[in-house]
Amino acid sequence: MPEERHSLVIRALRRVLRPLVQFLIREQITYPDFTELLKQVYIEVADRQFALEGKEQSAARVALLTGVHRREVKRIRELSVDDEASATASLGARLVADWLALPEFLDENGEPLPLNRSSRRAGVSIRDLVERAGQDIRPQTLIDEWLRLGAVETNEHGRICLRRAAFIPEKGFEEKIDFFARILAAHIAASSHNLEGEGPPMLDQVVWRGGLSPANAERLHARARELATVALRTWNLEARDAQASDANTPGADRRIHFGAYLHAERSGKETSDA
Image (cartoon, rainbow, N blue to C red; front, side, top):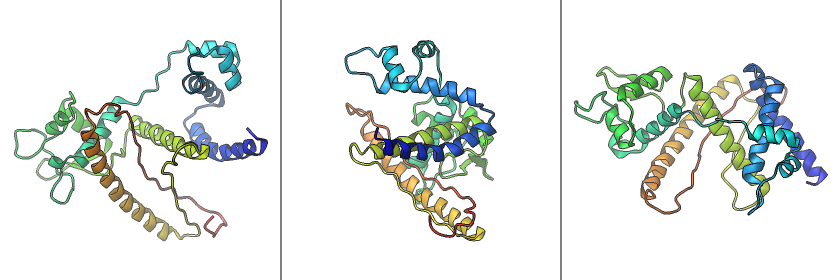
């Protein structure tokens, strides 16, 4: 890597790492904890993404690529690492996405219908949603979990109503940390792909403004949430149709993340758009 490019990457990483380190300190993840994790990830990525075709990835080559000593490479390769997403969080998110996309669970305006607790009553139910997705889970278990997370509420008729247009749990650290990992990993992957300039660029756009009053900042936050909800729900409907049409298509192995975010902070003495 040319020296100038190297220094630019280091400068960018310093900026990216500040909020991450703030989060780590708040969660009592110490520097030794993080460096051990970083070594594991360096070795994992070197093994999975940088192996030479047709050749076994040796500890010596991994050490060369990562700067981690060969003894450490061998030790870490023997570790059992589990970083799979929470099954509960993933299932809950999938079922809410179906609730927002499948026609039988939407009213004439495209809004999610309230769901009955039992299929014995007229109208669609939580059981219908679970069975439509081919999942083996008791509807009441799902209801209890959604109520705990604040994702749903019960209306005056005892039906279950979705509180948010996207599954962003208000409670439940396990579910929130699953979203944290999924969203940041996808965003970094898209941005790094665009930096490399190989292949068509991925969608990665943002606009920002500074010098705003607290009142206008709050108004713009609400407006962003409103616009994002429309965009995400529209995309989810089209993506669900595409997923259904590709159900038996050979080579249908692509996964797409499409999201939106807003971050607000004090801009200090800055009043420009920078």
